[in-house]
Length: 335
Image 1 (cartoon, rainbow, N blue to C red):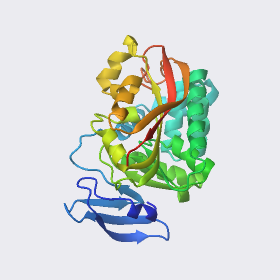
Image 2: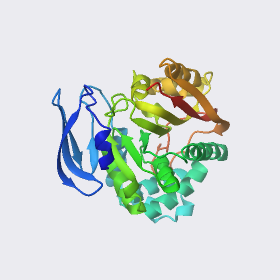
Image 3: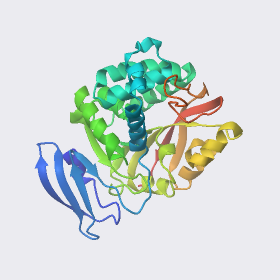
Image 4: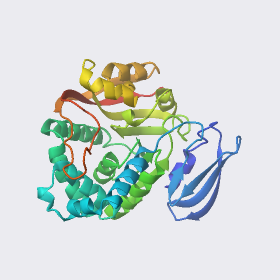
């Protein structure tokens, strides 16, 4: 965790100041520490360079840890499938099995080969239009932030695709955040491999209760992260509290009359941010300014099933063909 964050952080529970006991540090980084709230006395550790500001009051499921653990457990129980997945020439694997091979390589720390296989998989897992629209949004966000002079906070970073693009192309400080410490541990090792670890900080927190002081975040981004925030509740109000500048959210929207995909969307509880009207209503209700930029339409298909791991797919949505409206949501907070 970079030291500049110390002045930006407060207790996510009661929003009071923190006192710091720093045990291991370098010139720019806090490696091991503990922050204590001066009011409610809640404590938050920094472990292996990752600041962990999770609060006990909000239920959450660490889907990254669940998926990784389930995949690891399945492959451990089926060594013959691991052998087939890893020994088959990569060009002969189905796109989804290429995707799973990349995950195994990533778990083993073979990040270079994992990236090559993942890029190959994505060419065929998604439609050409889907990939083109996604790349266009990333390029748009990078371009919009090309002149920023402060850190960029990325929300719900996951495996940090957008964080990597921002750090490598802009050479600026980026804060990768997620409520999963397990995925952030992977991300830190990955950025060390890339040689970009000097540009990236890592914070674990729930987007519904962030550890930032009012208005201190001047630039915030997310790459398809909004629908991954379960039971968003007052999420937009919290974002409006901490953002003293601009939030750029790469998003895509399902058609409201798409009954084939609606059932799964509602079961997953993610409808708040996968429908355009609902997202605009949530952000407009905060009183901040919201608009859609760089809009494009892409035909999307269900990701194909694995030929090795029965019934497995790369993505749960869509479950039927649909037309996705891609855009970058620009939100200017009141703070």
